[in-house]
Length: 327
Image (cartoon, rainbow, N blue to C red; front, side, top):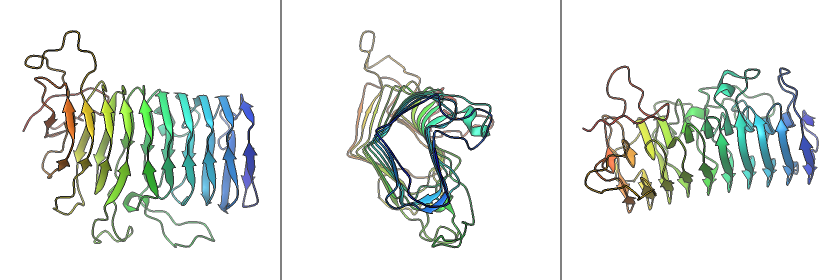
């Protein structure tokens, strides 16, 4: 089902199965397509399963809801925010389990994500992504885009933009990363002015456990994770390669967080066990602050290490494997 160029679109309490047309791009299970202001429209409390192409797509749309849906066995990015012009949409209380690769969509669908977005200017609350072939959630933000007619800003720069809201999202059992921020999210006060000051953004209460890596970011700007829980991921709980566009201050990157290296204590020895990973694998050069946080069961590995990606030719933790370098 699709809403084209505004109107009212409401899909509620429906079972949608074997939907989406493989190899026919844009034919999704549910889809708001270039609809701009969709206040009062929603895809809510539906069961969407065994999809051949996505579950819920938000394209050049604002002020609509994707809420309380269950998506299972989805091909390609499941909850998909498409271009970077989408803003003030609410994606809340959704579940996705089992996300499969697709060679019929975007290049990035070969590394599919439960939740994928080209812009941060939306609201993600109380969502769960489990057992994706690659990622639970992926912020793959575009650099600059000119919205279609009717938007309230002439140019969007999502890679440097502010967050709507991120609170109480859960990622588990995803093969590569729970949350991936790649290639860059470095928020600025004026997103389209690269000389503008950093604009701190806050992500609350993430739960990321038993993924390949709990949270990975290549260029991680002034993003602050408060109240997070990261448990028993195969690689490091946190892997951040660079920390650019950030003022030097004492505003912690992680605060009130819990990091647990392993919950399997059968052969764990605090003095000799080397897990081959860290609670936080931080960047090479930039400062990095952590406050009021607890690290449990890292043994001889150590809770925090720096120099992530500092050797040429190495991409630390991008494939879910941890390499130990200390500095």
